[in-house]
Image 1 (cartoon, helix red, strand yellow):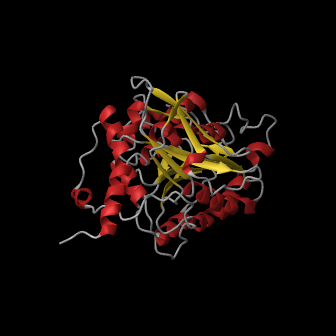
Image 2 (spheres, one colour; image 1 turned 180 degrees about the vertical axis):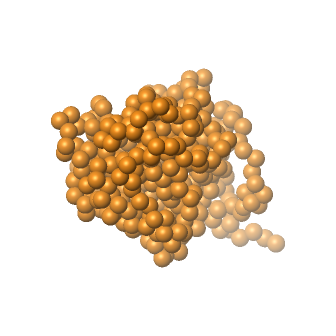
Image 3 (cartoon, one colour; image 1 turned 90 degrees about the vertical axis):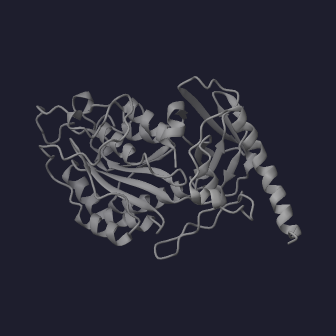
Length: 394
């Protein structure tokens, strides 16, 4: 049977589009994962990769969109370094109309060719990490706001509800079921006293970074006394454990930690890992942290615990390409939940295969620039070579 002219043209266009990636992969050999039978039988796409802003993400009750060609290619191509990028104007509003040729990406100060670009919305894999040892007024505000988290999630997003104090308390696992999430959030009760015994670890056999595991019972000092109001919380260990929960989520989803806390951290006496260990884990797993600081995090202290040089809330967010929100009022929480999920879902996605940099180096810095002036750009600081193929595998 004679092929139609339209299919012939599209097939040739697809071959031209994929040729540069095939050449680069040959010059930078990294063993990719074996394709599944589904990917082997997947027909050639009939549309080019989108390079224009997508429609708003689906809301609860709407049908989720099908996986795009770009998302499928990101899942299969393990050589890519993937960069979610947020761009805002001077008023803090998202800028949705940038094109591929307006971006420049630098790895270790060497400019990279952008092999893949899209402005379409991606589904979220989100760990909601709630501080379980807040002051009473803060705990009441957070407790009253928890159901509003659902308002920012689409039916394609998945969430995992967790708490922490001296220990990490995992919930029931990732789910896209809005009814299950609603029931779990309704049953989530913030304790007025910190726990005195560690819970069971949420899972076994998970990867570690620097030979540490934040969810191990040995992660804290068993002899430490719990003193209300003192910095006895293991914040670093909790965020590290949340990062491990996101390890196996697919690359075609945004990996996000929503951290609700006052930023108080117990230091090495109550944490097995350091803030630096946590940042390394976030970068290795391509996870963005969106921190919501409760009111007393900066209203009741002479030296602000969310000070840029001191607070892990800001350090987690700044290094991972996330954001920090200061909830001064009870109604602020719901507003911030919706804002951060919209921002995380509707980031630009830039991807490239590294060229011209030292592949033996452990860490690679990243800088993203745009040609338009006056815009604020947020993305992760860099990545670790050992984490690209393993931590971001499909």
